[in-house]
Image (tube, rainbow, N blue to C red; front, side, top):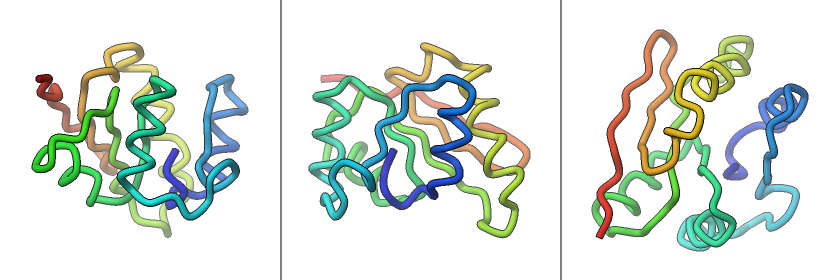
Length: 115
């Protein structure tokens, strides 16, 4: 997970058994390109709240195993903690090679282009 994602979300995903590598714990201050490289090296889905990753993946063609953009307001912390787990339950392994946007009431999904 990108370090812009809050620690409570990391804790809630770990509490239900997900293996979460949190950049804030292991490599704080890493730039976005290096975060993508880390996700690729570790073969991990990148969960972020930073829209800049979409630009890096789609316009600058940086490879990432999967990208999940969380677009839920901070003041809605309960929903923000639940929706990523719901997305994992719904998509599972299909999150690989996918760009998923998590919003309050829906998921938007598309496949990532591969070279």
